[in-house]
Structure formats: C-alpha cells, structure tokens
Image (cartoon, rainbow, N blue to C red; front, side):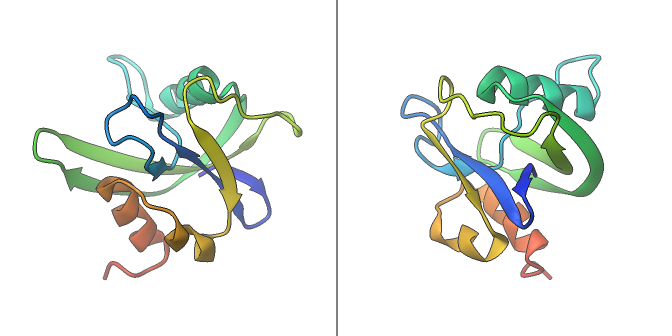
Length: 124
C-alpha cells in the first residue's frame, strides 16, 4: 500500500475497458517470470501510474480464487521515492488517497476486498 501521507493510502479506479471495469483497487500488477515481488511492484507502479516508489516490508498476503484464475495477493508498504509526484491517469480512470476507515465507500474487486478485510481485521 502506497502511503501518500500519514494514514492516507493510494487506491486507483480500473479503466472502463479493463476487466472488472471502474472498480477500485490497490495499485500493483503481475510478477513476470524471473522477477521478484518488489521489482514487479516498482515496475508496475512506474508503468501504470508514472510513480517511482521505495518498497518497504511486506505487510500481508492473501489468496483469492476467481472463477477462471487464482491470485496470490502480496501487500507491501511503499512510499514515494520523491515527494510531490503526481499520478498519471494513462492506465487508470481515477485515483484517491484515502484512510482505511473510508475504504468501505469504494467498490473493490473480491481479492482487494478480502485484503482490505484482513487489513481492518474483519476477516478472522
């Protein structure tokens, strides 16, 4: 989770043409063959949002099964490498910096919703 300022985390809205269109998500992406999670996260945030980040410790992980594929979801603490960077909307519809308590106002895909429940300690 990219903490933009204390207690406010970046979420992005999927594009209208993507799978699960216009749902909100924690930014990230797929890990390529031969790539570790941290390298993939840096690459994906640069490619999708135009952001250079410093990836910290893994905060949690979870697994979710969609009807046609499974996803291993790893959440890392991140911060901007240089303060003041702006989010590019070239690959996303919108973005927000929100507190954990506000995230219930946004509709997330199931895997992100499960991750959020774990972060809020609702998934016992």
